[in-house]
Length: 355
Ligand SMILES: *[C@@H]1O[C@H](CO)[C@@H](O)[C@H](O)[C@H]1NC(C)=O
Image (cartoon, rainbow, N blue to C red; front, side):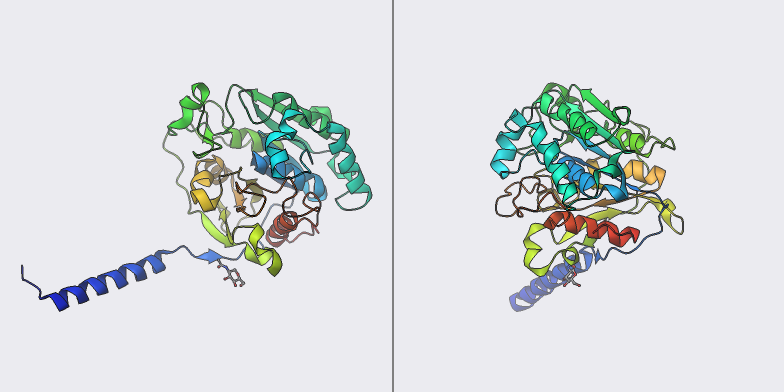
């Protein structure tokens, strides 16, 4: 039935439509939940990350080793390679400006001064590091020194795996549906200047890293090129509660997490994965999380995933994790602002003491 509306009515209809669209948007906005203690298999934790997230995962692993059993790093560097701010991180440390002995001594001194857990806690741990050989940001030799660092602080050489691959600086996902997949082996991907930071079809980083760390059971590997596993929704959690009120600018107010369908009423594993620079929620919403490869591995193997989110702040223009001192001098020890916040997230979910 067609009819001509007179204009005041027309404008009222438009107003009502606009209001109801806004209400729908508000209703559709995803709920931000609070992290709670979850039912977990009682074992030490694993942590991983790509780019600055891998550096931060290592920082967490070294500082809170008592609660960890291993770390997986993708295109990362050694502990405290960049204590002189973001530009040093971006341009100097990766080109050999700092000495590995400084990182080793920093870890030893921090442990001696009880600013991080005793290094003895690292003795039986596993370390995995994926190293792309076409990476302009950091020399391959510097990435390789991660092995030297961990050996010197007590990890057994046999428990350190370095995996070198023909690739640019990306998170390897083995996702054949990813259009960047094959390209990144041939053409330089836009990341870290734009793009989503994932690619490479022949190596499933999330699976390989986790499978190496967990070790005592063989994880199920998502079959590449078939319909992906049916996934649960990626949820948002409140990160502000893990920061003092004066420190709210140093993390995104919310982070992401994922609970596999098999974890209802059953103990599961827990893993924390940290995004790279410029790959945070602020820029990509959940795109990097969803393309990282972790959700599929997590769903198949009952691993609860935490994906905390960093943010842009003064001295951290790319929303990296603070592995260069922009949150303060304590950035690499237990009392570092982001370090403490990440530890509190893990304390909340596990019920164990980190701090
Ligand atoms: C996080 O929790 C605090 C404290 O309950 C609350 O004030 C804040 O609004 C929450 N943030 C979000 C994004 O829900």
